[in-house]
Length: 451
Image (tube, rainbow, N blue to C red; front, side, top):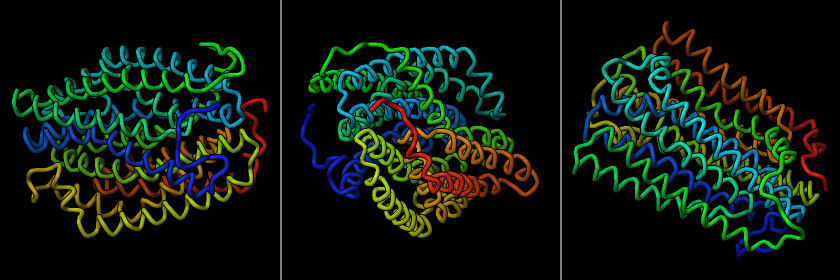
């Protein structure tokens, strides 16, 4: 069945080795993915001003919800692709790939049109401060124009990962992220386009990345020799994908939905606090990358081994994920306690104002709890790879509810600090629910494909 050389095999190599070699390119790839919005924030924060940073920050919480929809839906559909690949059913695997691409192209276009029509309404609903509203609306409108490109790239990245190829998305992200950085600097510094410039730079970089990704994926699929003719669309397969993709989308978007719903409370504290909070959330988004990558790696690992009928390998891989996320969590805690101020200063020119103080407090507090989201993500990934979607959907909804309710009820009384104190409470509750379900072993009995 074939396709390219790699240094690991999900079905035969030691689980720790397979997961590590697969996850490392995903971690770097996701870090470069974060560079899109982080670069926008750094450039406008340093070369335009605090209000421009707040405007991009107000849009960031909204755009990340749509990114999460693309990633979550792609990851959910990729479970079917992985299981067909593990079972050696190449024609059905290719049918699953094309069905996924068509579905998400349509979804991306529809959501892009929706966003262009209602972006100002969305900003109004989350209480965006008046002094940054115009810039935030401009940034968001341009971003929605490129939403189909964003959807197609992220879905294609999920498909590459489901095929066991995490290096191609990394190479594409390195290219597009560097392109985005260059365009940000040119449009903002040379042409003085401010917020408009960083939005257009993101649009161009995402568009080129999506087209290149599609061309590479089509070439890769030709390397797999199918046993029978595949189809470009299968309605029955689409239904199976939707059953997994919807909960997976919920899982991926929970963090971002929580940030968006909390954003309306944060916005009420003013643009200075919002700028500091935006800096803190950018640092958080970088910090959780290895945790989410391990969860996605565990999902692919579980799906392929379930498709091949090798359930005994999954538990060992799960243990290796624990070692990884706990080690990374401890390292991040030490890093941010010692150098948190350095990271916050990347986003804020003034290292002594209210915005800086808010961002630094955010970073120092959350640094103690990043292992929580690693444990949650790994356990959710195992369940998602098995196609057992009910338990981790409930767990993620509990996560979201805790963040939103605690922030909305207590932040107006006790201050902005409640917004980030609620985060580890949600992560911990999510993990406990998913882990309890994992212990039942019922995920082993779920059937996604016919074997």
